[in-house]
Length: 340
Image 1: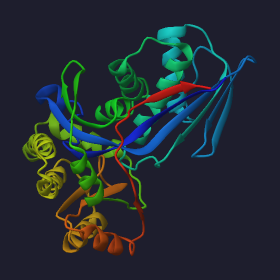
Image 2 (image 1 turned 90 degrees about the horizontal axis):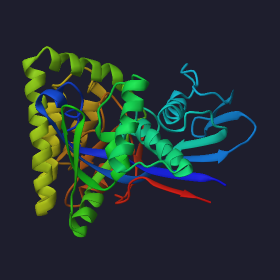
Image 3 (image 1 turned 90 degrees about the vertical axis):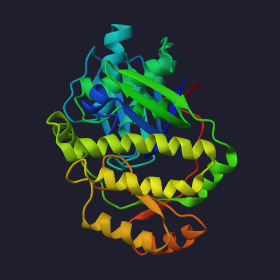
Image 4 (image 1 turned 30 degrees about the vertical axis):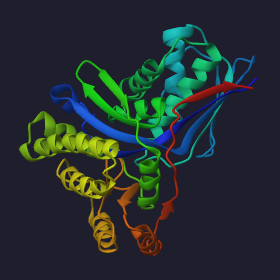
């Protein structure tokens, strides 16, 4: 028997950073994101030899361990170990023996929520194998706690919920771990137009988001006026993005992205750099009406909104830069699990 799962990566369209504590706890956060047809996947093969074998196929890393109630968190495939430790602690109460194979379609630090999406996929695979009574909110919240609390990895809350629910969602975040996921019913022709006009470009660089998030958190905690006001404005941009998509006012998307990028750069140092700024300005000159970095910033994927067939010119110019254009489609489905 093989137990499989997959969960989609996401692009953040507006509100990124407002899901990070303490801002979301103090003021409430709002995010609009959408999942794409790139995935994190996990496969579990049960064993009966008291062994645990962990494979990260995309990174070509393997760890073989003796089955135990808790695996040591030591920098080697800690995301995989962290999920196992929590599953045993909360549900099974005894060691398990298995192989776990994982793969992610985007590198760490890409800004597409790859680490959190992987945690969701692994939780889903264990839930399918062990028939755990977990709904969508339960899986997303458990994945959040594993990554942010158990493993002490900095970040927000949107990625786990996007991966679990899938589709276009307007998400609200409040204190006390309250999260509300509002699925958006966007007409197909507007989704197709957004797919056509959005260009996703990997800058061939990754970033350590924890450093950027740490400064962002410090600025909010100390009520640094510029950063705090920028975060308030980012939350408002998520509302404007929701209205534009639902009303089919696609022509507004570029301007909303452009305004969001201007505010995002004020949240913390390291979100942008001369290379990113230069690429952004060049793409605006090529016909894009707006864009932003996906995720915390500093590297990874950039996106550009390119109306009126400007995407042809933007892609042509981007091809001259070090990096790669990522073709994608939006996907409606979130976490999926099955047995074979």
